Image 1 (cartoon, protein in one colour):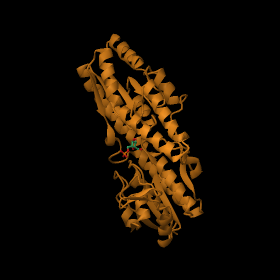
Image 2: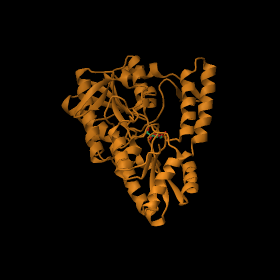
Image 3: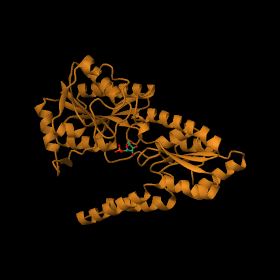
Length: 371
Ligand code: F6P
């Protein structure tokens, strides 16, 4: 068999480990040939193919980023020479021209939608779950998440000592898109005093009350882990309403107007962590600072847990291709890696359930959640 492979969406630690895991099993255990495509689905649409012999997979296990390059480009809306074109049919034609029996895509929720489009165009597709956000439905976890949680936990540790020394409140803004897994995991692991998640809209007064109660107990400092998607009660309702308008729009004029309104709301809320810092400084009397962790969370070498996970899902996906199991994601369920239909994954988001053990754990150890 000849198999194509590409990485799509935001990069994350473990992409190269997964390329290696898939490739070594595909070539070594099943005698397949491997062809990479550069820069996500754009590479497939424009046929930017590169042969990947076994030698190309050596020495990449520990590398951050992706040797193939990535992009967030969508197959059905590719910007080419100033024009937006649907390149799905062309991508499927390139798969045939390269004599590929299947294409393996490494990505997150957005990638699942592209992967499904490719599948609907007649291509045999298998997806590997990658994201630091841990928001993919149909899998317990995704590679990149554990490493990002380590990096963010280390950052929260470091913020503690400086917040303590200066008697300050420090807000650490973490990635996670619209879900709070990374902030909750790193917040608990780093002992943040308050953790704010998109799933639990906060009230500034409640956050200030937690900081106050710590001052009364002799801790005149606090570290607050804020998810990039977290909002106060008012902003959260405004954002939810704007998103619902986009979803319920019927005509293209309605959709255009709803999207423009959503963009205005998003732009007005972009600096929400700084706004919260300002409000907390006023309410608590403590100097307040913001640290945006940003892309540091996605960069660098994967930790051991992600190397293991990426290698496992990679090797399992090679077995799925060999067995002719297509149109699926290699989902992690406990100790098993199992095929999950792409139609169950695409266009869905795994948020933190409010009754999740991590949330009750945070509450039990006295962490404020702003509600
Ligand atoms: O999905 C991964 C992620 O890092 C999110 O946590 C974040 O919101 C987003 O990507 C950033 O996207 P970009 O790389 O396009 O700036």
